[in-house]
Image (cartoon, rainbow, N blue to C red):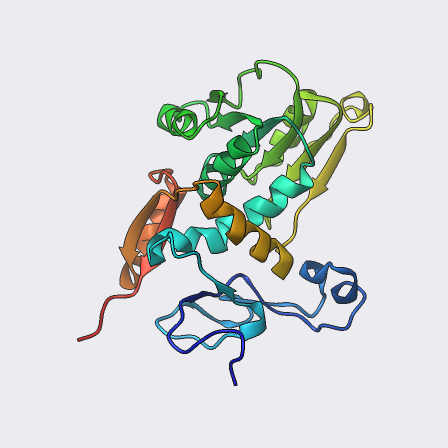
Length: 260
């Protein structure tokens, strides 16, 4: 039986749907790396569905401050964005590459924490740059532009490998480039001197339940607002096309239609 939630309580089902619970990763706080992990909508049924069956141990109570559509991006873009932000350490000057669903949430968290955010978009995406500024970025420009000054860390939400050496060149010594995507195009060869000085390139994989509990407690306190464009479930392909073409500011959300 369900013990963590009450009947009728609203809950969120995240990407991480199940882990083995006993491997070295699971027992050391790194369940996100479990080799037997299963994922919602990928190895577990439930994404793109009206009904789903989920393991209560991996679900989260949702903050009451958000509607269903507003809360949806917190469970994917928000959670992986939060883990990426933690991986960036205590960087006071943070570069964010690719200003989509995750970036628009994490920029608000970073600003609430007192960090400065530099937002990098495709050179022609002037609307995206303005969107970043409206959420608190102190500077926004194209990836072909130099940052106003050296950064302490950079998070790459854009899955473009060529951005890795670009970001490294803009980092202070000791800085970190965090690659936040599941996939990324090949990273081109780059000279060792842009990595030297104890700079670091690392990836982020999935999330832990601890990430979820921490982030969902912080989001309403930080005043995070999600910018969403809702689509009916039957229009999933249209939503994906909007995403691919860059016509979205924020996140696309699929909404189940009320049954009669």
